[in-house]
Image 1 (cartoon, rainbow, N blue to C red):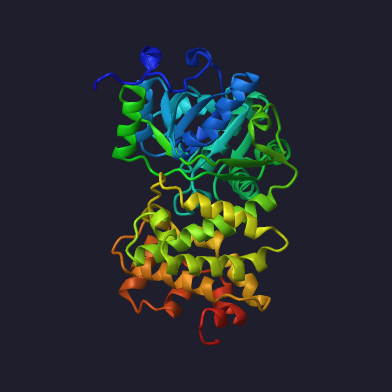
Image 2 (image 1 turned 30 degrees about the horizontal axis):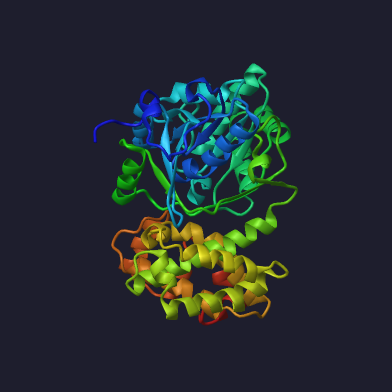
Length: 448
């Protein structure tokens, strides 16, 4: 099979595959997305194309890879087209036409800035992971040579401010509590270093809604790529796979036009906190639990880990005895039933190694706040403490850990490598683990 998916071959896709009901080449762009990985294409891309189908509008996406050219290198030869494989009992295939441009920031700086400054751009979305919200002070942004997603936003907004162009809305799509507020604070701080007037304009004119976003998107592998090729009848080097479930809640804080997301299942709400807390502290926390404990028991994927009776029993205790009391009055039990069923999907090979990455950033959001709150309120913490132990055991067992605090882990492993020495490092644990007697007691540490 040598034919490749593109606009020229779109009409040769095999029957049974859903294709765009519009001409992708004629779709105008209204969104810039920073961090165009698989999750964005499998989730926000699908919701956005559905919104275009439902209500029209020039809402094509300019996707930007901030570091590596890998994704644009697959999308550009395919004219932005890619296939979404939905991993249901009978897999479903859909060719997407929503991505109209794919850029690499490090090589196409002018094009990225032009897209951010364009009057037709009304929304900028981001999937840059939790670690993308931490700015390294040792690598300050240089005007015209931004380092992080926040620096790119400041550069683009500076161009709009100077030209008198209408503001856009910035929508974070990362697993980070209060993601919009955190992004807003970071962007304003960087802008303040550059221009106080720009910082004031951003603070008063730019919307940064908080969001909750959810769908399991396993990394594309050779098996998925082969299934896609067989289904569509040609090669697709940019295909993605996802579970059937998808959820997106966005705070209603827009500063301009937006796609008709609310017509295709997106929750546009006054407060995303309930959605956010359930996602972070039930789904994400149990994901991390299954990763660190499942790998230690020899499992490779979520569906295998959740089928382990001993591990399932532990996760059930974690959810019902420790997480549910911390999240009351939210209906944790009902939400967990949905999550549990999703984990058991036999078509979804969600790798535990992938979930285990970036644990220092993830657990800081998913687990540490609940452990701290429970300890202070006299609620159970034993299961959460064991998850922390499993995370450290995982880090200790690997010479190279994919984590924003990899250097701290390396230093810890070559030293005493105990819980006490790990907790003493502020790069790995927040202050409460050193200074709060209740938290230290919950972790089995001697009072200091």
